[in-house]
Image 1 (cartoon, rainbow, N blue to C red):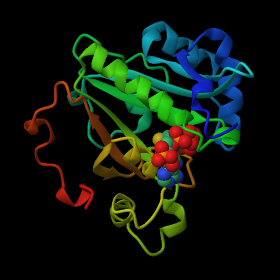
Image 2: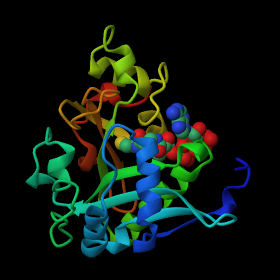
Image 3: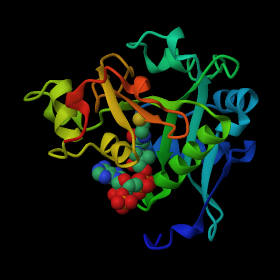
Image 4: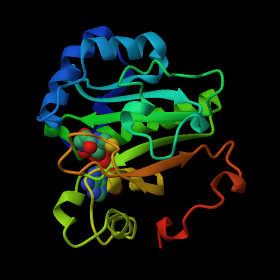
Length: 228
Ligand SMILES: CC(C)(COP(=O)(O)OP(=O)(O)OC[C@H]1O[C@@H](n2cnc3c(N)ncnc32)[C@H](O)[C@@H]1OP(=O)(O)O)[C@@H](O)C(=O)NCCC(=O)NCCS
């Protein structure tokens, strides 16, 4: 795909017919873990259809990315909870639009053949617009530290994140999310099981809705995680 023609990408809500394409992308992005199952994807559409997106490359009619999320009441969870806990084992049945003000970004992935062509950026743009439309306070999620495994002998996960935040190292996931306006507010272990690249470590990240956010919502953030 031509990197100069992002207008060929359309983002729309996920439909059942997209599931085989999502599974195919998933197999290529995460070859060592089972792909999203039809049962899980069906459950996402059942509980929160408006929150599930795919990116379609219009000239080929091909699904080239997906972005899945749910709404949670943040204080129901421990800061160190795992991805499984935040997503009810990938089913999103803990979706809580009555009390929740946090969109939990459970997944974003782009076909490896078209990464770095702004597909992820289009998906996040739609995610941010949805948060603003629903009047939610923020998006939060765990950014799995895919580049950490290569630096684990010389850096702690915390120091690795500081290097990425300050632009001295690139992480394939976190650098993208920082570029998309997210901030780090913590580093946790045991976030994902069976992820040798990150060794289970993740940066907790958030994007604040500018229509709503007040200074007190980001009070107490570790200043070292704020980009120099
Ligand atoms: C992370 C991911 C979704 C990004 O999608 P993408 O379509 O490749 O990203 P984009 O092309 O939209 O990038 C948007 C911007 O971020 C920048 N960016 C993307 N990846 C980057 C990286 N690794 N380092 C630095 N900047 C990066 C791009 O240069 C672009 O900036 P620009 O607008 O100034 O050119 C994709 O790489 C992916 O699917 N990774 C595997 C799955 C994964 O790890 N998901 C996250 C789970 S927490």
